[in-house]
Length: 387
Image 1 (cartoon, one colour):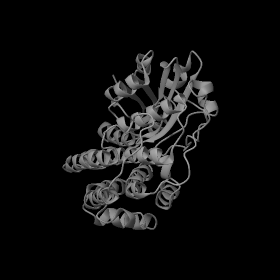
Image 2 (tube, helix red, strand yellow):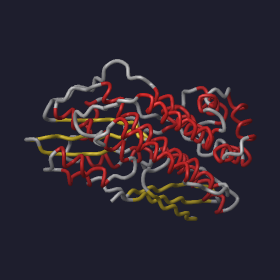
Image 3 (cartoon, rainbow, N blue to C red):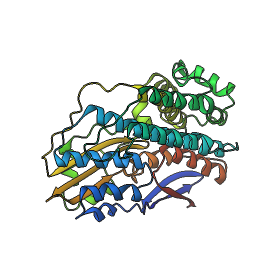
Image 4 (cartoon, rainbow, N blue to C red):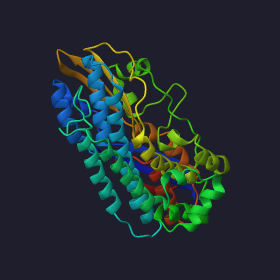
């Protein structure tokens, strides 16, 4: 149901001169919700979208609440966002503790990811004893705040033991490239070994592509591009007026001190992007402990008609849009971050063009690292062709 991405690199004299990216992601899948009730939609959607299922559910219920005319609530939004951040932590742990060790010949272990899954389950139950966080209007029911704090402490301890070798907040205080390199050289943990491997190979700048972050998108832009009958063309290969854009952990944290220091020295290549994933992971305990402030005020929508939600999922911004008619789904659309980042002319392609290596094996390794840095939400196939 989730499809794949096919990536073909074409070489000339050992240099990647052309990249062909084709997606078989079934963007028409949301049409199965047409004619269903909101309840049926919210029950079925997690079964169809297992990758970043929490973010998908958050986007779906938020869009439904808008379309139903339910008032936004800061506490409700914050509780759901924290579930999404926990899911993001799990997804990042998968990359840094399962993918990264495999790239550099270290043993992989799923124990930390399994532990995070248990922590997510406990956190979710404490906030929602009825286990229904993604039902329109449902509020969190936190009776024991100290139990929530203990789970956040366990998340922090997990990151300390398995990823950073120090409290995540302390790791975030690393001052510039030299401090990061010292950590990479002296820590025996797989994430540090991965960064040190990039330094040894002198692949810090590999894949550097022009950074064009996806800006905030207002309702009017999304309506204009997702309302027409041929909107599937935009959803399959989205662009702004001036071209392709990127939405990723890197674009979310690149202006922080550590990532900006790496980018200033090496450009927006592998090192900056791997560092960005670690930075966002280290920030998550603080996000979980934050108290919601102010009021949640969504963009204006017409009650009973249109709902649009934008959620920052692990891989980038996820958009759900629906229209109701007589209490049933009349139209449902999903725009995932992979469509922006794996656009045929987007950040993935731009970073792959120009790669060169002494052997096909090394070239494939470089390409796989860049693909992992951009991180599709589906599987992919990579093929290398010589002219």
